[in-house]
Length: 74
Image (tube, rainbow, N blue to C red; front, side, top):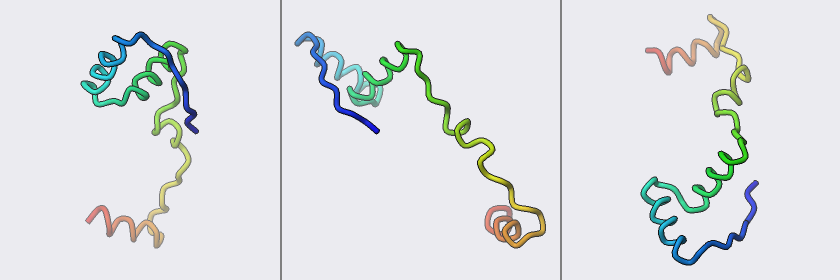
């Protein structure tokens, strides 16, 4: 869940920071969030790491396997 945060920065820094964020394809909020995460040493696990082991493969020969193989392998 995201929460709103109010920051106070020098007046001349704001346009520079916005241009910097835009040049990297980020919003200023996303840039600040990344910098805070890095400074705090907080890193969420990747999508793959979070979901690893959560799904079981379809058993070969079963109806689910046949359906998936027909759709994606042929």
